[in-house]
Image (cartoon, rainbow, N blue to C red; front, side, top):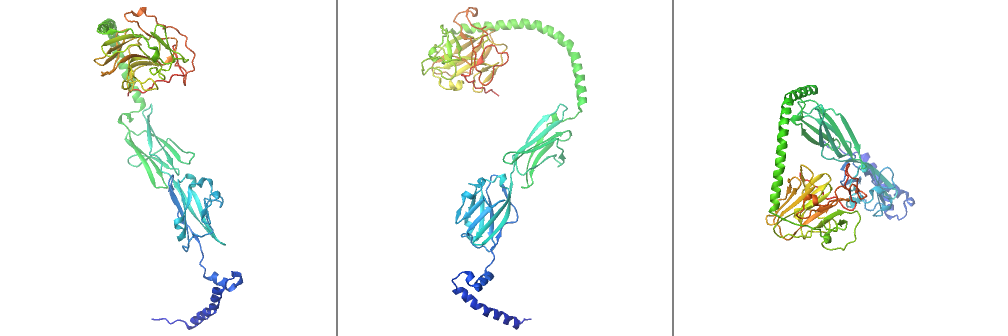
Amino acid sequence: MAVSPNPFLLACLLTLLVLQLPTLDSEACSVGPPYANPSSHLTLSILAAPLDAIAPQEPVLALVGSDVELTCRFSTNASAEHMEELRWFRQTRSPAVLLYRAGQEQKGQQMTEYRGRASLVTDGLPGGHVTLRIRGVRISDQGEYRCSFKDNDNSEEAATHLKVAALGSDPHISMEVKENGQIQLECTSSGWFPEPEVQWRTPSGDRLPFTAESKNHDEEGLFTVAASVIITDSSIKNVSCCIQNLLLGQEKELEISIPAPFTPRLTPWIVAVAIIILALAFLTIGSVFFTWRLYKERSRGQRSEFGSKERLLEELRCKKTALHEVDVTLDPDTAHPHLFLYEDSKSVRLEDSRQIVPDRPERFDSWPCVLGRETFTSGRHYWEVEVGDRTDWAIGVCRENVVKKGFDPMTPDNGFWAVELYGNGYWALTPLRTPLRLAGPPRRVGVFLDYESGDISFYNMSDGTLIYTFPSTSFSGPLRPFFCLWSCGKKPLTICPAANAPEKVTVIANVQDTIPLSPLGEGSASGETDTLHSKLIPFPPRQVAP
């Protein structure tokens, strides 16, 4: 059914429209200020739409280190390009997070912590969107942000909230077996925000109680967590550590299996009683047997040791007859400036003071080394070196053209084949340094070189035992004897004269005095009576073969 309009209402509206027309005309023709034409001012107030600032009510979430944008807009989508002032601020209006005035960002009125990180996204200004971009979000950026605009006498502002989160590192679990057979597990992780929740869980989802828990934050506000648990139930084979960021709704989990041998199956006192009973049984049965066996082995071992030593010495004598014994002398032109050579060119020691010597291409300037004068391009040769009870030395063979300037590693790849005593350990100078297990410290070392077969061997000349043989090598070019000292002292390294018995070699081996030095980093080891490490000579590389 059609509804006819109310005649009275239409008449009223028509009357109001007629009365308003002169006002509109006067507004169109007026060029004076609003206060000069009250009717015009009244009309504009009725027709102008309110300009409000609107910001999202839901918090904006950002990850630490990422970029984030916070936006507020005008309710009418009016352009913000020519606004008198756009401002983003936090607790106080000034200094601001960002101030945009007269089409320019006002850097001088910006908070220090936002300089270079906060900027205005101008692309949205025509559509009334005032967007703040923050680069490299920090924990301190979390909180309320307010945007405001000012245009003539009209100003509005709105608030939004930024929440910051960080997902930390993968959990790390360490295991410790207690004396009573129980297993303690500790789970650690870092780089979380806000404070995360840590759980120890079984495969069935049951939570395990903590024995200890700590949560600490660093200077940037990121949390490091640690939680420990002790496994007492032998039926538990697997447990997992779960760290949750409730704000992000994400978690990181690591599962660990408890090895069967470590799973406690018996109470500690039962294990202790069983061990005591077994120990007493073994002691009772074995004491008589081992007493008798020890007597037999001792008498047999004495005879065997004497015979074995004689055989080794005889084999060494036979090996020496097949080689050419070399009367090696030291070459002073190759000696490091801290090495002192004796007049006979047979002995050398390391001094703490540097000698004034010509700088020659063949002279070592970094490693405290010296070469023998003799060169070998063929044949079989050997020589002996009296080391006595001196510590920290290296002897062997090297190519004549090895690099003598700088600290190139002394390895076969670089032309060095040598063994050394450093500290209390003997080593072969291979790429990964091979530890040597010797029956006793050698006082005289023999160096055996077979050029054609590529063989370099070292022997303990006191008992005839082999110290070390390098893998067979194809030599090219001259080889020379090589000597190196790692520490200072009055006990020299001495080359034995050819065809002389050991007792006819004069060696300074019992001097207890040492040259006073300033040790490098720390003092010498307890009980060391020979030398101190020189502050001028670096330690040799200490990598060890796995």
